[in-house]
Length: 287
Image (tube, rainbow, N blue to C red; front, side, top):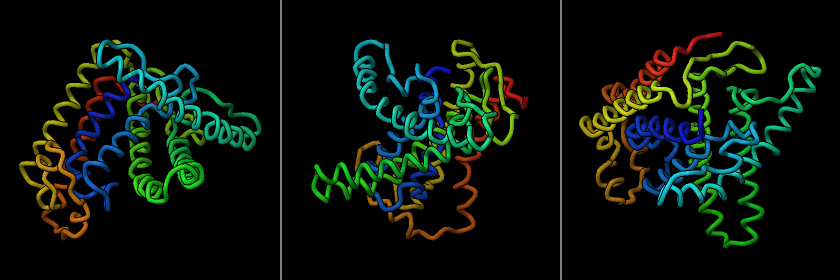
């Protein structure tokens, strides 16, 4: 699957969960709504490409290329941002962890594409280590350049950014599970994989896009219709569309009642249903 496809599928999946994230303050508690959402989305964007750091020719290592006009200009900026995270993950996370796995497996498990970084264990380990690296960069390098208030502000948004990276990386694994190469979710503990027959240029991609798009529309409509965001003290239209920054900590002050629970979990159900449908479309199976 191409890098831009990973980004598109992951952002559509994020749109499905948006009402839940805003309603509960999930990953964003204590921050300004608009700023935290931008930071979280930036993390999702990078995370959607991060597992491919085990391949030297991937988008996370070189940035996204191609396009015309404004799209080309936007993609050109990723040539600076994405390789920073790509090289950090590849050389300071992927290779060290792979070396440990190689040693403990007595040489049986070697580094390869669709291996450690394309597993649940590798993804979680990489996300935790990356969060530590980013915190060190902020506290040591940036602290020597910027004022304490600036580094403190950056530190305060790191949890949202790292949570976004983890979400994007997990979605990457789900998406790759639809392809022929598949994903060994329990690697290096199991050789069982999930794989399908999705190809980068196949018509099935459009069916999956339509499925996720419908799920996103229903979920976003649901969020406004049942006013989950209103219950949490947040209004999607005013706070996000109009760009008004509202203190999302009001969500934490709201009382969660049993009647609210079904409405809060509906975005999760929509996303799960959309990807189960995508698995069916792509013929994903255990192998």
